[in-house]
Length: 219
Image (cartoon, rainbow, N blue to C red):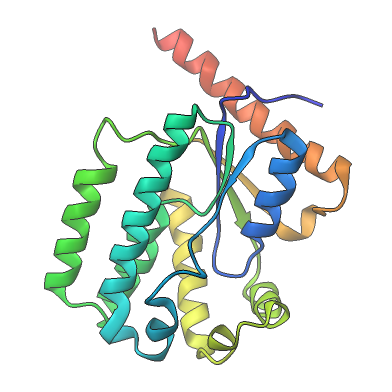
């Protein structure tokens, strides 16, 4: 099995309910890395958001942006060695944009949000993760996992929202270039199987090796 440098930061991306948190824990345990999770339980806007998208979408996105920015700085200050549940890039490119396009975030709010994102995240000083591990799945698989997870506010949300979100993710990952990407389908691994996790780590190590060689040749 290939190993990863102990300063590596892996961020796991994918739509709601796809299994990011579960894989975050499994990979961190396997690599002896720290974990970084979304602040869901202490989010003052999440439940309100699911009951009224238009009223709370801006508040929710600002909360997530601030929390993820602080967390990215914390990871950098630790010197890496983290597996992170969800990337900061998804917030603006998928969630905020979807609400703006769908009319549940005003043009003024979206502009304010994007200006903050641009100043905070698109700065050359922002500490990027080393690799983005993207989880692929069919919409049916995602909906089944949401039911299994059992969060009532998600189960009661109209299927059209999850369909739109799934479509956004599918389009987004095709054009994402901020950091190297490793794509895996959720049906191709088992978090309880050591060999399965080894295969994921092998793919990450390969992508990082290719990037390192490319960087050296460019210099």
